[in-house]
View 1 (spheres, rainbow, N blue to C red):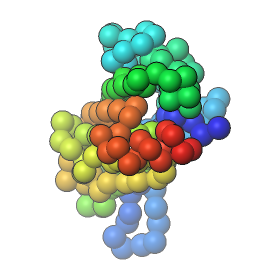
View 2 (view 1 turned 180 degrees about the vertical axis):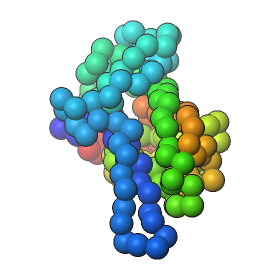
View 3 (view 1 turned 60 degrees about the horizontal axis):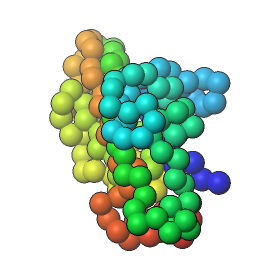
Length: 170
């Protein structure tokens, strides 16, 4: 079964003068190696308050929202649960990375995802399923200081064809 929500963030620095890549994980690297982020779920279980969540994860399996994967349309329900998850994480960027290209890579998020760095949109809202996408965030960072990452995830896409493919046809 495909997970309905997992997030893995990788912070990458591309050196301009060499083929070397530096990686800083903002999340853990998988099950048993997670990091704790601030989290807010808009509806369902444990919703309406800021709390903590492990990342990477699936919010429903950590006791948030409503678990509806593959069930709502089979049960004849008019609408699926439509909650949103809001994530926040503060991280430092080494001052030595100042003249390098920095990208943030999300390994998989379900479904629509808005990413902000220090209150600025990292790029267009990602619409779609559980696949890798990234943004160049070099111009949004505070090098040598603290940075705030905000990720808002909508359980269902604003794009009906995405919902059809990801929810009904999966």
